[in-house]
Amino acid sequence: MSKKLKPEPKLSAARRPPPRWQQERNLTIFVWLVIPLIILAALGLVGYWGYDTYVGVWNQPIAKIGNETIKDPATGNVIKGNVTVLDMRYFVKMLRLYSLTSQGNTSSSFPYQILQQLENDELVRQAAPALGITVTQDEVTAKINSDLSASAGGGGNATGNVTGSITLPLTQLGKLYQQWLNYVHLSDSEYRQVVEYTLLTQKLDDQITQSIPTEGKQVHVWAIKVDNEGNATAVENLLKNGEDFATVATQYSTDTTTKQSGGDLGWLPQGILLPELDQAAFSLAQGNVSEPIVTTNGYYIIKVTGIDNNKPIDAQYRQMLASTKFNNWFSNQRQIVKIIEYLNQAKATWAMNHIT
Image 1 (cartoon, rainbow, N blue to C red):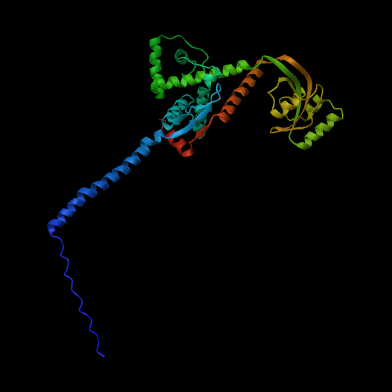
Image 2 (image 1 turned 90 degrees about the vertical axis):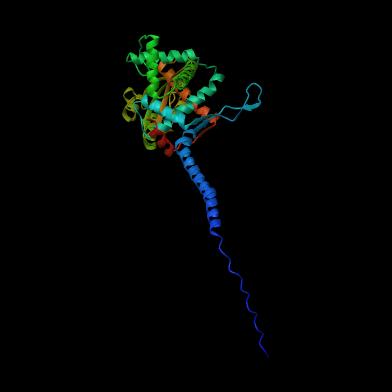
């Protein structure tokens, strides 16, 4: 059987390289098209890095305060709300201002304290119309001039509390004001806004203080404080066995402020004592002694020796009640108004490094 011969493979002609002029043309096209794209991409990356590092960071939000929608109290309809964004640029300016007026406070908690202050300012601003609180530009000007005069007279600084002032000509006040703006690195409008927030908050404080009654129900309270349940039970047994409350307080109370007076706390309106003690004191009948009361500050046994439904409230207690109501107002607003915070330690550090 004869073998079949394999056909000879056909030889293909070798591909000739393009002429030199064509190679040079292709290289030129590459240089003019591809290289510029690479350069543009590089410039884009550099530009993005520069924007993100030196421009964008100033515009990033630090906090948002306000509700997107709210219910109209008059009609009940849902309407557009009021949302304010605090950005890094504004935050750094306020950090600089408050660091200068607080003797250069640079503690790690300082940025967070100032953020809360700025949030509170905005809460007051948003609530002011409903509260009937307004501040005119004339009031802002008067406050600035008063603070500048006091500062010139040695009574304080341009944003602090002052004890006295001197009268200065308007031209001198204008020069002092411009010096102050240069010192705190703020514009006139920016600083006037700070003063406006200060006045709004002061008016809110005044409104709350005026709402505190000048007289009301008060109880005369005596108290024995001990550190643990065992001592509380021992004191309770002594009182049940007829021991005098004041004598037991002098011997066993750990409250060094009142033990020498037999545990006498005096006449108190509701809202002064710790919540647990306050509730017990205003629930006891005159002459009665409570069971041991557990608080975050220890164990107490109290006695009520007098009840007066219309007793004048001391000024110090009215101020304490007003302060509590003032703080509670902000706590309640923070429950009503949506607040989103974006501040973290890295941003806080960056901001503090840029206040100079």
